Length: 431
Ligand code: AMP
Image 1: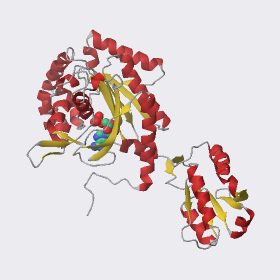
Image 2: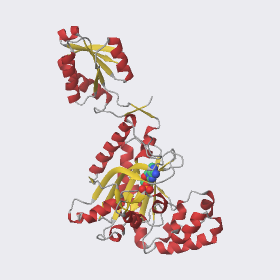
Image 3: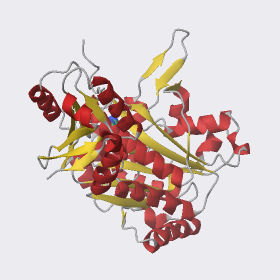
Image 4: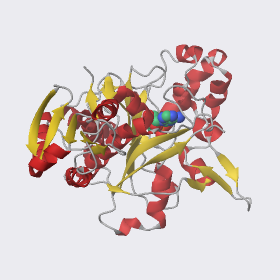
């Protein structure tokens, strides 16, 4: 039996990256006032069709949709925004003054052609804010995203922004774009030839070369913005610049979901081949009303965790769950004392592995080597009688006797402080 194509197992070696990314995401999001929400992975198909848009690739081609035993049409969620909005409306969270900023982390499903960085089950870190229309928030959302990437030490990413206008100014652009595409209809791929009637903005998403060429000289949305949208966009840029955040205005960026308006943004990289978007989002002021809720503005983004982790792994190797300490025990007598010391170290947050079943010192050292333990603590009968243990630094190949009662302090103080790390697992820069 094999896993389904495009749906991956995340094995223990890689899980450490996932945990580190999730931990950092939670820290950052909570610092900015976001609270976690968890929604089901299955929803009514209609929720996604109505929110993401009937004529988007996601709804037209990529949805895992099925009828359940009672004939009700359901879908595995292709993204989280619609579910979070649904939950907000359903539970009347508008009444709760704390319920404005939400985040959720979990799997999403899209039936795309799998390749590096593109999967059928993938994971997103998703953030949504309701009820605030201030451009200050748009800037804060992007600044938080940059803050998160900075804390992860992510390199080689850029922030691209655009404004998609609003229902007042976008129709003018749409009409001109339709006109433009009509003149170039013969150059377009069959998909885009259909899109130009139903959803002309989607043509900007097409990866086919001749469609890209056909778009040379196409009208740009930023030039059509109404006064309100233009002011909003200017302020967003001024706040970003004022906080020293580098960004590029990309007038061709339309995003793959229909509900966006005004500010949209994407974090892109040139290090992942064709799958260049690590995260993206934007404002969606009409969505909550369209889904039957109060007319509250919204803004949000999603980060693709697989792509983020692929990027983080470039140029780094992983201390794949290696223990800080390996406890080697010689003979039967010191076992209990060694076990106590191991538990005391673990109690102090230091990862320790033991030699189960004893064996010679040589075989235990070999095991410690395989686990890439940073230190080995050796406890034999002789040491036990003296109330000490031998601590061997595996990298420096040095060793010292440390009183058993001082072991915790020794590792906490000397090693962890010297390495400037908190106890636990995590990636370490490669040499
Ligand atoms: P979207 O929900 O389409 O705005 O996508 C947000 C982010 O999710 C993208 O920037 C990607 O990093 C990630 N993503 C979207 N689709 C996939 C996929 N099929 N496989 C892996 N990551 C994806």
